[in-house]
Length: 276
Image (tube, rainbow, N blue to C red; front, side, top):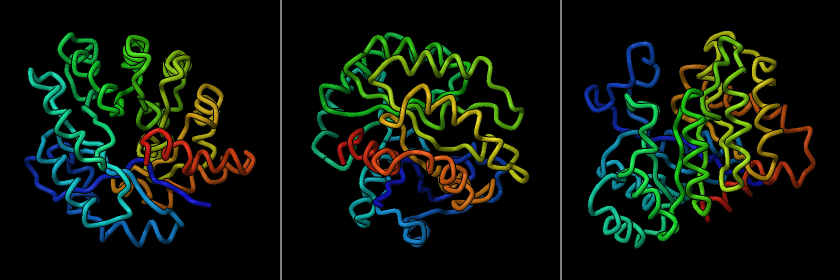
């Protein structure tokens, strides 16, 4: 069965540029490049991946595009562009000439204002993505879900995907506000969800498959098998068991679905969403 990893990163580690990689994340304070990932994908029978931005710069987008040119298993790039820029449309038109760029992401979870995504300038940028056939990855935490729901409702033609299931508090086994927020967001049919980044939200050294089941139950019920996709969040997952842990967390759970459903989850939905 063909598999696509819908969410992973590459970087040349720099302590200033990558200040978010703090000392408790020492396992990823180093370079991670396609040559490191390729054998891991092959080991797990994964035929391609989506490289997602980790730095908010146009250089990051160019870096990922260049890696994709050199390595055919990188099927698409989710880059960064300043959506608040006055010349955002010109930038999108230029990026549209590079088919490997599938969409964009902003690190919303890092903004001091939880409502940042509802700002006029930011929304102006979002409003232009559909015109140029770009997707948008929503990187948020549970407290941002109401605003993401408003964003999705404002732009019903725009294809959105929420990264890492909006980072539920798995380590503390808290569902409450996150569960309702996910259900509200999933009402909008233009929103997909990545089943990714789970191990890093759990207890890094002692997580068990049953820790994730309540959260998986919520997203599979809310979005359905048709709007969910697998993502490893490699190499970030290396702090909590690595690629094996990231994929094994979901492999047992997904076995309850029929072959057609599994094919959608592992590859079909990502292929359709990102138009690979």
